[in-house]
View 1 (spheres, one colour):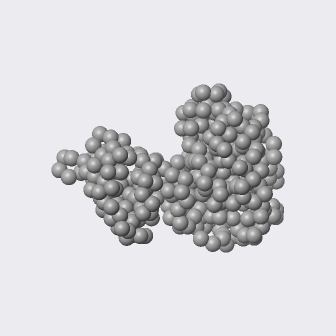
View 2: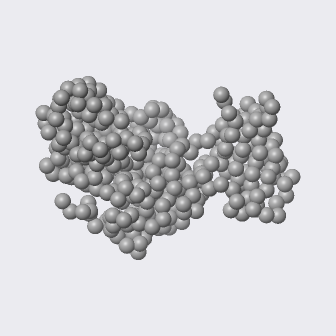
Length: 404
């Protein structure tokens, strides 16, 4: 097996920029042929979107937008460009398309990095029911030449027996279900020693669980993927962050906005996919992460992110009123002098209090107070801070109240 899935993984910075300058305007033009995406993007000149800076000027697409569009224009809201082989349902409900050829979800790159390939038998314990996870990993296994046992979820005793009988060499599924199968196999006296690799997603892979698998002779790595986007990022043998997949463009932005944060700051993950069938442009995942500096020691040169760091939806209720990240963004937009804002929710006695911290110089606090009332629909204390002094943790709403 070659070390890399293809030559794309080791491109230089200049090669990546040149490829992006070609691929991005083509994908924007392709997206504009879909009625829903064309309506969302508005009057955009696709030929002018040739780099990340230009991309960042386009509107963010959220799951709520997609769901509303699908209700108005079933089944896909006008966001697909062609008919594909499968349809899936995610909570909402939201419906996604899926394909079976050409590594449609781009999972092959992740499986290759994990060491899975021809000669492996992969016990695929992701669900094949309604959601695309099972098909995503089956599609990826086909791309690397591995054999798949489509086990799905449940029936643990049968899963353990099949793993032993078939000589399964690799597991695909949620991080914790593998332990359940291994424990059941041990209880039944089965030999599962040929299972030496695991590719997981859909849940947190805690260090202690990864170490337990390592102690049992299993190398376990994880990916970050979604039903809408396919593979977004994945761990390599270096296991230093997650490497962004070659088929997507990832931005990290201030939650509730489309404004990119500085490298290393925590923010919301926004993804543009180069999939021609489902060209989602600046799709908001609702997840938090941060960009890591430099390249992976494994030799793959694409951007790295720190993986899943929580959810970006920080909506909270203060004095009976919902306060959302989008409202904080609207406050910042009203005042060019404000570089950053953060809402702090606390309780004094038995009453909610709200403090609005801003990074600004030479600001009219009375004007800011009026804007707070207009955008957040609440009055609050205004605190002015020096540039760069507020935390860089991705929070724009910090609820410090206790509920126990």
